[in-house]
Image: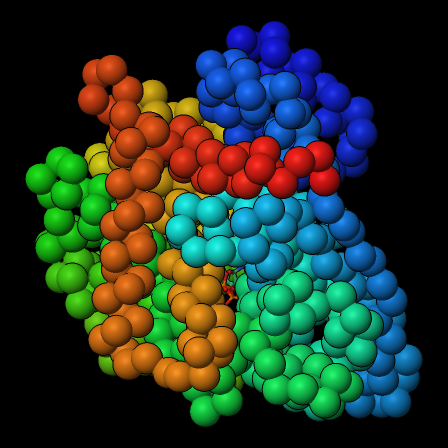
Length: 446
Ligand code: NAP
């Protein structure tokens, strides 16, 4: 089996040798999917996995815009349309200086499995730009978003490809992108999700990824007769996903002791309470400041340039970015008695870190399962747009909770091992794969 996996990965690597993040995400899938394909030759004959690692389409374009000094700036825009077997392409847009084709292909590839797991009819895609929103004025953000959409509009649409937010793209950016699409097309459609609630957005969409990852962790803990009540929690990041993870943890009676950004982490031993979380939300969403300002304001410790994983905890939510938790961090977590790691970010744990978690048989959920709540509520936003109605908070939240519970069930179905350990990564990969593979078989060689 190892030889088959190795041969497959060598072939992908020979085609995309300069795409380390994409190859990492393919490896994580191939290791569990290839043995499954060997047991199910119909997928092998139709070369489903070989087709799935090849995007249906990759768009790359120039994004020129004028800064506040009236100087010309040039960025690069992307949209990776990975797989449309089960629905229109769906996945976020990331604006961050690190964005390149490798990162977007890994995100688009993961998105295919994640969207399939939600049970909703959504294919997988991802896009973005190497544009850095940090330090830019509102007017510069608007001009950039308008220029970006002036090219992207040709390739997206409510039944074609429906982008949403991701790192660096929140409600403000979605607004500017939507405005420009509507202006060019002359149509008010559900072309983006994460819209404002007064113009087609769904309630609970901002909360969805953060709440969803906590709901998933609660299901995982439930398999061991545990709950969040009284647990000490580490959260990394302080953006959208991190903020609502903390909110839901507080509601569930857990004590969240860390949050971070790319400059370091704050450590609040008595726990971040609702008032202090409100400060973080204002700091990050309105003032666009640094997490170190939290430490200055409340007099707690700030660890510059460090990640929070060496702090003792019961549960960890890596919610910032890819590869933010390595083998050494994983050993520190396990050594300190951590029993559960649920990923809010996409691929935050390195393969070596995942190995440490599964060897130690602690509860570990990959982002493609545990952070699917965001895209799930995006799918519900698409449904509401098509029906031209809006559901209540209670309705959307209970659908989100149900979807996360069902994803957990799929992971258990395909991931339970002989000794009773649930390999959530295996479960998520196989569970996500089957639905897409069946659709691809039915639709022929396309
Ligand atoms: P966000 O609101 O832009 O927040 C990102 C957070 O991560 C910020 O605290 C940021 O710090 C930190 N960060 C970004 N790049 C970093 C780096 N290279 N090193 C250390 N910290 C870094 O984005 P988000 O929507 O919360 O997304 C966070 C993660 O969740 C991403 O992996 C994303 O793909 C994933 N995700 C998001 C959604 C969603 O609905 N938004 C859904 C599923 C998965 P700075 O402020 O210093 O940059």
